[in-house]
Length: 410
Image (tube, rainbow, N blue to C red; front, top):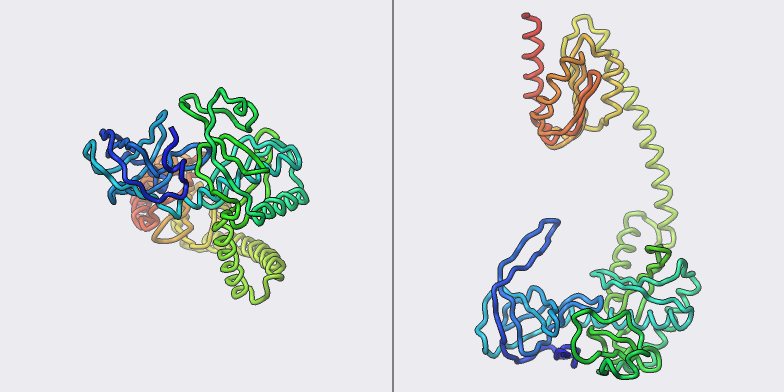
């Protein structure tokens, strides 16, 4: 069946009836953390909320002010996942998140238009597409799309938008002669009922279950951002449609304004200024590394020249690195002394190195790592790794001092 949202993509609410309500789960992921929400799967007599399909994400909205967290298609049905149960047979008001819906309509119809123009001009077939949160892309069956071709495609799609070309939704049966003539990537295995055709009049006719604008003028504009190499000798073409173009322009101007303030020059000079800064940073980093190496050698030599040098040498530097620690350890020569070095934030995480006689380091290395809540490995008299609790350096020094004192007593 065609849902109300497919028959009238501009409808924002619908009074309908609850057909079924059963317990269900929803798998979600937020910030890399996976969760399973317990709730209810609701089937309605009809709906204005589009279930995912055709490359288009599902809608968001409300059933009687209860947030709908996910809508999925199950054969001819749309399954609404909510947190509160509903009574079967109850009349409910379904409302759609219009901003999200209209954005999806613009991107989806924009994809159909770009796909049709790329095919008609250059014979580049669209093999897949993705409606992303920030930008969308079309996968074209060609290894290269030139800058000149992108420019021509963009100009023609925006010309069609200015011509206010109607977009008509038609339903046909699978035995209709037109079925075999309409562009399509195939029907899903569980498809049932008539086939929905999105007809951009005079431009393209394509099978699609998604929501679309009724006139290309509602797309406002399309901006092709560029291309990148895709999979299997294909090209991904990135684009924005409608309100996303305006938001992109606003973000770009905000960034440009901030860069102008930071770099103290005009937008046309930003790239040159950043390139100069990068070169300066590389020179400074090189000089800093040279100084750190010199400091490491000097630190070790100062300790070695001391008349009453200790059996334990400890050192912490906030701005050091692994190379700095290894140079110090190499210069000291660690057979007769125990060396404990750390670099990084004193109260957070950093790097550590323990060096000395091989048997001693093999014994103490894991214990040092454990105290620092770190991970490390060792061989040939050195144990080094990452420390997550640099604040425990003091406890490590106590451990090492006790070990040395015990050795002296023995």
